[in-house]
Every structure is written in C-alpha cells, then in structure tokens.
Image 1 (cartoon, rainbow, N blue to C red):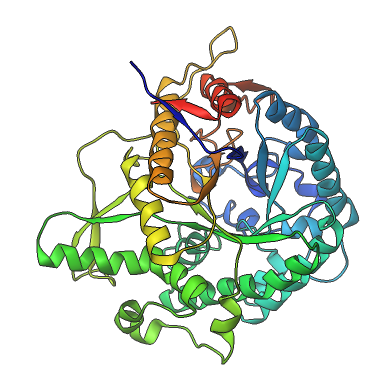
Image 2: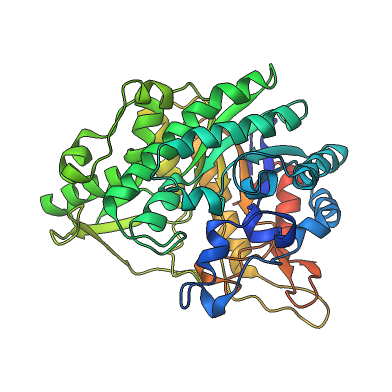
Length: 444
C-alpha cells in the first residue's frame, strides 16, 4: 500500500520561469548579452533566439489563468533588466516596467504569490560593452536598477530573490564560454562571481526598505558532490569540487569569506576584495533558494584546475544527460541546513527535460517527468522529517521554453508549448502537480 507523505501546513507549491526564456517582446526592451550570444554561429542550437520565445509578454493573462487552474499558490519569475532600463541605466522604459505592474496585479488577483527574481542572466548589452560583470561598477548599476523596481513593485511584492544561479552566470558565462557572454577567462569569471555577490549585498537593504514585510533571498544552483571511489584521492577531489561548485557562493553569503582551500588552489585567479565587501555580501537574508537537478560524482584528475573531473555512474538519465538521483536532494538540503542554518529554504527550481509527444487529442503523457517529480517531492519530504526548514517547492518550469544553448530542443515544462502556434497544453505532470498542491501531500 502506498504511503501518503503530508507536507507541513502552509507549505508553498509553485512553478518558476525566467524572463529571457519565455517573454519574447524583443522590440519592447533593450538588447542583452543573450540576444548577442544567440547570434554567434554555433553557440545556440539551430541559431534559436529569445526574440519571441513563448510570447509570455503577450500571453501573460492566459499563463496566469493556467497557473491558477493548476492550483499553483506561488509563481517565481524574473524581471528583465533591459526591459526596465533599456541600456541598463538612465531613463525608465515605462511600457516595460508597466508590464510587470500588470503581471503582479494579475497574479495577486488570482491568489498567486509572486516571488520575484531580479537577475536571471540577461545583462543589458550597453553595460556589457562597458565591461560587464567583471567591472565593479556594474554591481552598483544593479543596485540602481533594483531601486527602480522596488519603488514600483514594493507595495505589492514582498518576496525577492536578488540573483539566480550566480555560479552559472559567472563560470559558464565567463570561464567556460558555454553561456553568454561566451568569454573564457578564469580570472574574469571569479571577478564576475565576486561582483554578483557584491551586488546581492548592495540590493538587499534596498529591497528591505521597499516594504516593512519584505523578505529577501538569493538562489544558488547546488549539487551534492560524491567521490567516485573510497580512495583518499577521490575524497579530496570531491571536497575541492564542492568548494568550486557550492561553497564558493554559500560561504560568502553565510560566513562572509571565500573557502580557504579553494582560494589557495586558485591562487592568482582570485579576485581583488575591497575592504567592506565581505560584510556587504554577508547581509542577513530571510531565505535561501536552492536549484537542484542532479548530483555530481568526481574522481581525482590533476589536469583540471580543481583537481577533479566528473564521471557518469550507471543509472537513469534525462534528455539533458543528467542523472535522476532524488536522494541527492535530501542529502543536499540536510547538508545546507547543518552547515549554514539559512533559517528558511525553498527549492526554487527542480524539474527535468524529456522527449515529449503531443497527441492528436492535445495531451502529453509524460510519465517519466511525473515519476521524476514524485520521487523528488518525496526526497524533499524526507529532508523535512530530518529537520530541514523547507518552506516551498517551485517546479521548473511552467512552460516549455528557450533552454539557453539548447534553444528549443529541450522541454522542461509541465505545460507543452507548440512553438508554431504558441498554444499551451497542460501535460499529465501538470495535472499531477495540481493534485499534490491541492492535497499538500504526495503518494510515495
């Protein structure tokens, strides 16, 4: 007989998206680094762009109604910096800011709580031309942008996330070149990471001042790291990789310092820290957002900067070639609570891409995605029973969308999008999520 796992009263069920991946409306906003990156030959699958995406800019009322029908209690979305300030600074783009006004009002009118992310990788192009995130001044321009948004939306928005996945923005964007702006320089990547964290610290008091009830957090992509064997070399490699993938962002936010072992390992690549920076970064936050997709297994490899290389164990994999490993979510949540005590935690993204087929009847029978979500919901519940203060869960993603370098070739949504007609079709996984949200429980 199946076990029913009940979540605590008030547990929040929601879904998540990002501005560049769904909005479209490119002519109504400024150019960003991803607009440029999409036009580099060979960088994005089939040269796909975010120019139209899901046209959430034109379909937001339909999408909010869809969320309400699916029983979503909260919606995590990001604001496009170049939609609010076309060049990143200066005059406000009133139509762009008004769009978010209307979106917030639409959500509140449907009883859906907005969780607003202020940066999800779409740096205005003009700021990139002035040096981008490796330039310290951009952190202060981010604070100016946050002030504009807080002044407009702070009377209705109380839950703010400064940044989404600064690891990806800095390391995939500036070190490995797989994301915009496509640079490959470890020193600039670490400088970018520091300035992203600094901008988080600068923005936090601005958001708090916007509303006495304001709650501020940051979202980090984290992955538990396991050694490939019991050898001492692999164990040390896992520790180093954990520093690179997880502690490089967790430690500054919660401890006000970078991990010493990685700082020594990276040596001359490490960024310059101005007096007062770490105190600014270590602003108290109200919650930590964690994006979890899979675990990382590593073995020792001295050829890599961190002395570790990832391996792929036997198991089930998604269309992203990511291992399905729900136990990793439990392990990660327990570890973060034990080591950092964030007070409140949200799973701000978790989901999977599979090959979806739309039937002639307009259905998508995505049994693999439903099973994936069921197992990860159960893993989250297990963490709660071990004392983790997990307060909510946002499924990635509401809609199939522009999946960065993969273009439109990967579908993460619980709602299928026909990119020719832009028609939306809830998948079986969406109906499953509605059942879970309504019952505040999952059948294990």
